[in-house]
Length: 345
Picture 1: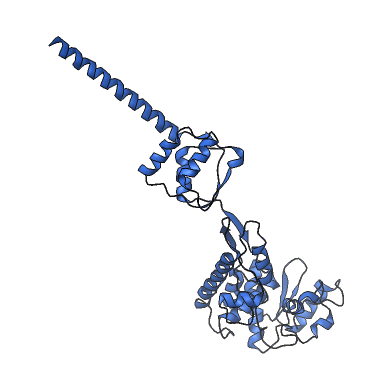
Picture 2 (picture 1 turned 180 degrees about the vertical axis):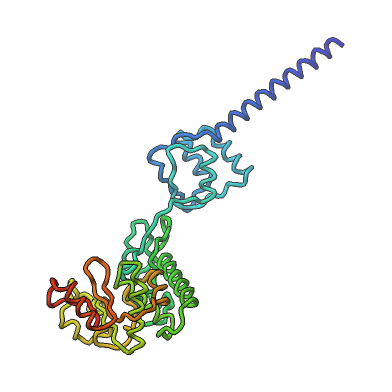
């Protein structure tokens, strides 16, 4: 009887010891899983490539002495169903816990980069900006306007104006084609939304003509408060059968011949974009307009102004009559070269 009692007490003590050791070990491992450990400097930017598995990644960090118990982390991943890791480039902090690293790779929180396409640049400029990014994957062998127009399905003579100027977020190995498509779809969606909400009695046959006008407005002024007024002047001139007579279209038509100045002979050269010589709008946009310029083209300011001239400070003087306009030209452009003009007649 005494022996049975002794064995029973000994068993309880042994069981208690086992439970205590197990609990202590469990708590220790749980703490290890959630305790940040230093990430070697050379692995602060870490890329998961094709063929990398969670097992391979964990043992890679184990060999760098970042992790002590790789099998425990693998077991934790299986229990929490986080064994799938997503490929890409990751930016790691100075310190990170094993669990945090596991969730980072499983969630696919890859390093993000940004690319900004500025309002007023040309389609060709935008494509060069995209393809020139260091971490962009080049998949397009031909970046010519005709090729991209065909690939994007643009039913116009040129893709000019069809990329939306904005800031785009991308990760390593995003392709140039991915970003071009994204910018094109964004412009298409913005233009469609603005066109559906347009003002009445506009002189545009379709949304494409509004895009052309928006590109001119974008190039004419960098002052946001002037966009609707500039658009109003151009709309009224179209409605009255007056030529637009706007320098940015002339510059666009000159192409590489433009060296910073417009001379009087340039204003007399018959090109499809010389709005001093042609009636109506030019055949295509001349730049990438932002949403504000598109909105202004479709919601021009009401009024009677038909002329404007640059003041030299980035803004313009607007006039109702030709006499007022000529006085403004003398006031603001007296000191300019006789070969230069930036005005409407």
